[in-house]
Image (cartoon, rainbow, N blue to C red; front, side, top):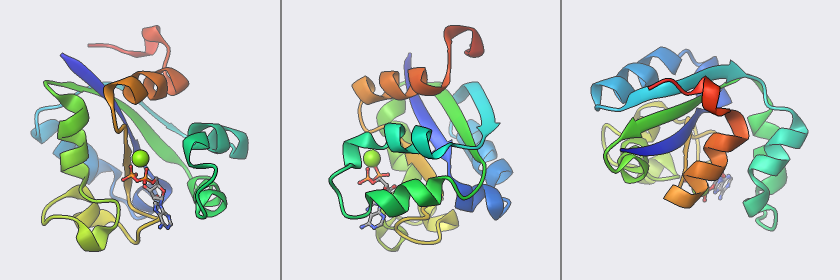
Length: 138
Ligand code: ADP
Ligand code: MG
């Protein structure tokens, strides 16, 4: 069974949507095998999003991700990476399909409620960024 990584971003936590998002994750058939609420340091946010370093929104993205606590998640399901991306919806909530998490809960293209790994390879890297093996309970 595949694993993926997700973040409930500061906007969604602040707006009181963590519980609704977790409920939806479980009702869509994901098993949550790791979950933690934490505040990202600037250094952690910079490292996590280093792949976007050259993009014009990098500085703002790092600043946004440190505005408040987040919830980090490791989720398991068949085809978890694609299933979680589909459940999240498009990066810009204006373009997201009805009933996706970003359509329901995002504020803007930046404050877009959730993060999700974009490949199996990155899921492994991102899971290891936040969780050690003993934190993951299937
Ligand atoms: P996704 O999160 O859908 O994989 P990207 O990896 O392209 O999207 O971008 C990472 C994050 O950077 C987005 O989720 C969003 O928070 C932010 N972002 C992306 N594009 C923009 C943009 N044009 N302006 C501001 N923030 C952006
Ligand atoms: Mg991405």
